[in-house]
Length: 254
Length: 254
Image (tube, each protein chain N blue to C red):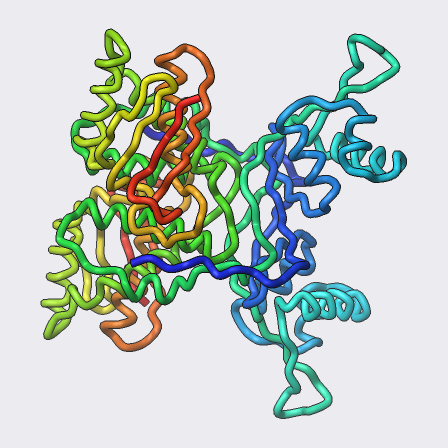
């Protein structure tokens, strides 16, 4: 049922990254701009820090920053500690990536020729999700950030059904919910940190092995419900996944 | 459950179109290039026809065509009727569109605040599909061509289950398949042309009203199974849809 992702030999492969500000969606290609945006997604930075990060001359960096400010993707504010200096911060969200190199693929024709029919109607829905996912992969498009956002929205809707008096009953409700909705079988591995495994995961089971975790929607679901339960922002990290050749998905709630 | 797509007042809104050649994915922004690619997706054209289409000076058009050939998105061949002339044809596939104007949206926050819980696990899978769809819409990304391609792949896999001795039994098998997989209730309206309606369609039911048909995956499914049955390429056109405010989806098989 699985295929292996082909490795790429093209050292010149480039990618387009898609960012969305409040006003518009922008496609960013240049390596320097992408490097700056990636870094600012993690933390605010001063001009000198950005110069150091990119290894480019100051006028070059200044020009890139000016264009990113004009496009509305970043904003600059005065450093409260030194009003002559500027601090740059991200004003956009990373949405996804288009790889300009179409070589790095599993073989989608072979993958679909091995799909076996099933009488379980849930398998058909899971196949729809996989078909959409593999089609994006085949076209070199990474939609993980958007799947993750969609998972967060759905998680927020269903949190009310999962609330429990204590951690044990909350985790029990999650196990029950996943089972009732045919999303997979949840097993809690540890409580500190919270680590859960999902067997027969709706999102990744039978996906091609691409060597990376694939459950971005599921991670978003877990982010939302654990953030609500713990009343603070948590980030779910997937450490094992069917798409990495593992038997179950392991999610660590940080 | 539905929201209304906000209209855009921004006359300067532009869009990025994503094309994929056999070698790579490319993002095309310029209006002239997009116009040329859109036209070549429909038919091959001569240089003079492209000049007329764009209304631009010959050297300008020549420069655009040269860049598109270099990028591998189009190819030129000698006109068999006049070897001094070139015929241009598309060498890429239209994958989707990013609207640079984020104003043209329904209100996704309002939409999700009105999602009602349901004990039917199929409703949860349908919600996953809707959540992904609305998240792309909210970010100004049109993924219809990719959903359509994914539908075609799945349709090809399942055609064997649907084959019938004659048109009547084939259509009967489709009705049964849609019902068994919880995809909706199919009613055949006419046979020449073949027109079918789908009530409670898995793809669009409860989507926001955006004023356009939304069932690209479903259209792809139908394209694939009717193309196989009729042994010729057919194109399914969706004329009514829940996302247009209609009670059912109407598909005309051309």
